[in-house]
Image (cartoon, rainbow, N blue to C red; front, side, top):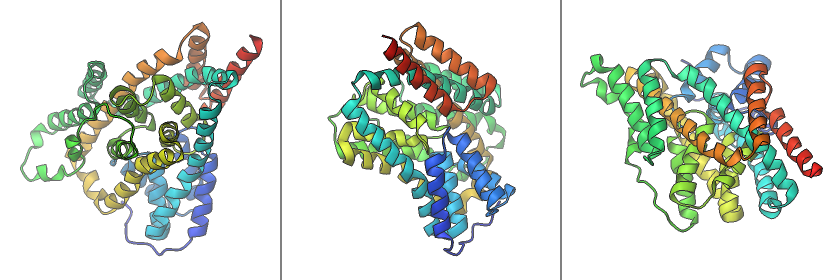
Length: 383
């Protein structure tokens, strides 16, 4: 593990310029972001070496939140201390937030026009394919045993019985942890389960009229408990904003996914889009703050705790269960979203074609999204 002594606060301008650049150009989701980050900070600038980079990548999987954003925050700390932690994170998030905010304004004012509707008609099936491809790749890495596979399938089924998704996620984690560590049970080891079981006490939301404090707290909760790919975010947003609060429709949610996908930077900026739809500029700012604030806090807290967390077999197996439960939720929500996106033979064909191009030819997701938009516009012009 890297040594997390506090580095001197130097190089802030270089740090800001790098992460602003990445914020404007990092298309393609977390895997692409991390590849670009590796190229910049390891290969070109040599700020850290490969071993440190891999250690940080493993560490981000042990805490909730967006992995690529947390990688940026970690590297900012290693490069320039606490000031670097804040500068790196903000500079990576800010460009995407501004771009998504612009798209949200266009959507609110022109979203019902034929051109905008046609763009989204072609983009939405591609988004379904992108989520399926991410789900396939993540599941192959996450399913390490028959038990983990069973937990994932069970969570998938229980979602459709309206079981609370937070409870499903952490019960899944506890089951895997207990079963895989049954032979190691010792009173002393139980103390290593210091995180993140406290989330089990979060109250479930009930249908309520829109309010800014509830908007902020809902996104703060999501940012505090979300493990796995950024795509799992949509499982939580659907459960809270579509199912329980009733503030969004499935159509609006998939539009938020589309905007988050074809813009650069973290997928979590879909929260900015949702916040603007619900509460204008104040709602967008509160939603963005709520979803990203936990990432900064968890990185800051985890810096001295990472060695303990990685050595603990209890925490390791707990997270295996949490991650597979998150993927089960992600799969269930994809089924729901597909009902809104695949509305005719053309959209079904578009989703299949996009999935083949992703799985067989590894085509960049950004090009597929642009291609889907083009199909929608061609369809409009041909009518």
